[in-house]
Image 1 (cartoon, helix red, strand yellow):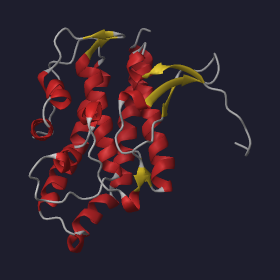
Image 2: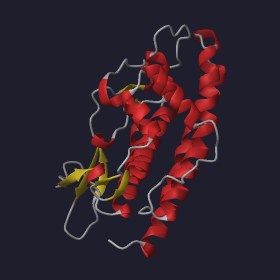
Image 3: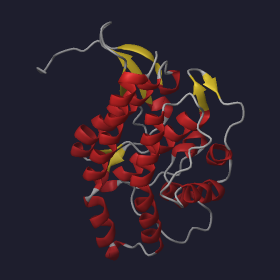
Length: 248
């Protein structure tokens, strides 16, 4: 693309305004791809990814809606990624480590916010999408307890719930509505399996974290590029399967 080129994008809604499974999954794939290729190279982390920070846009009538990440109000440099004490709906999508830093009487300083926690944040968005919707613009009749805890409980309870969510690499998708294609469930389970050991290790690191003992954390972060690539491959595989099976 030449410098000075203008791209005209037509706004089609936010992520939860999806019309098909393919649209929702592709939008999240686009956001993760942009993050891996652009934001991480620039040394920027958004802070927390939410459904309202993912726009559905279209460049021309012949294209499918794409996903665009917006809202960098709490973004920061990876070199100075201090954790934010964030109130309100963002708590739903905050990483376990971010929630821990907000808990009262937390005597262990948390490691800086990093790009893997943004992937964890995206996983919570995908989890809400699949556990909370039974179709386009159709919420489930009874919101799952874990989503309620992440959204409405105290930081301590939300933190405990998210740790419980990652207590097992094998995610139980029994409560995912029948609307969602098996390819989407496989995607959710695959992303969960990728993140479970990371969340657990970061919890252990937080308990003994100090400036002099960053080596273990730095080694963990060195693998973040591979983690994003693996996540993207899961999204791509799901989209290939959806292409042949989903009815718009």
